[in-house]
Amino acid sequence: MSLRTLFNRRPRLRPFLRRHPILRRSLIAAATALAVFLGVVGWSIGTALLAPGTDTTEARLAEWGRDHGLSGAVDWLERRQYQEHPPQVGGSLSNQAKELLGPAGGAGAAPPAAAKAQLPPAVAPFAAPAQPGEGQWRATEVVDGKPVLAETYLRPDASHTSYLTGLAWIDHTSVRFVLHPGFDEPGGTWAQQPTVPAGQRTGLLATWNGGFRIQDSQGGYYQDGRTVGQLREGAASEIFYTDGSMTIGQWGRDATMGPRVEAVRQNLDLLVDHSTVLPGVDSGVEENWGASLYGSFYVWRSGIGVTANGDLLYACGPALSVRSLAEVLQRAGAVRAMELDINPSWVSFMSYDSAADPTNPNPVKILDFDRPADRYYDQSSRDFVSAYSRTPVAPQAH
Image (cartoon, rainbow, N blue to C red):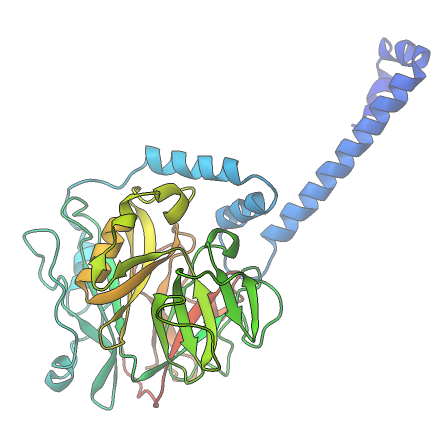
């Protein structure tokens, strides 16, 4: 019911408003302005909810709020959620989690003995006693008898013993890497698409999430010769080269701009440097490691690192602080490592099973995070990375 109709139906209001025409016109103007405002807000929210991609309703509303001056309210709600529902301390792994550690788990079947010898050393568990299979690498892709992608699982620390952290290892000599822009982050038009489209999936081995939104990353995004935000000296960076290789490092020290640099994705500061967890992981946690979820909160987090010989390591899990994320990557062999995105709506790592159809491999999640496994087969609102085999991958079941 409009205010005009309400005023005309209320006998006490009608004489009063007739005696005060200026007030009557002001109230009608205010009602009209309110209706227009609500209409614009409703259209804006509706547009966000109907945007392409697989973003959850919760994630879409949170992003809309942050884009419209409600960051404080969104952050407060997220803090309350994690303060009131922290991960369990102690306890045992579920049967489903134990299956991930076994030969039939998500880390794939055991490779031939020759390939197994080429896998990284096992990762020593943090919690005791160790569970069978904990920290033991299992190949998900073997090319020409050589493992190029492997996964393992371990509990993130000695306290959160009912949760698993997923780890992936990628042989840098056998893989080429592609940075994909998201249609919202960084937004705009780029040569690379915000998806892995049909016709470009042969040889796809893995995909994983990017970092914080550019405005929160304390750095920039560079691709196609242009930059969104600003590349910051000293920032932790994923650096992509024209030959398809990539590394993790500190911008300005481990890499600088030059003709070989294809793309750069920066996010915060390094967690691990010279194989050492940096003391900064325990300080400035709100500003440096997530304005809403802080660094000391045990939440869904993800990170990526590089080993001494250049191989890539990815880690994610539901009960990680900034320190425990850094310690997992360090223990797995990272000489340098950085945090990527946090929050169950954004963390994701998928390997791809080419057994049924090498041209359209089936995505397999490393852990049971919120997003669907095929999220990057659809349009992505956020940037992400894809990894392809440099040589044909023979069909192999996980």
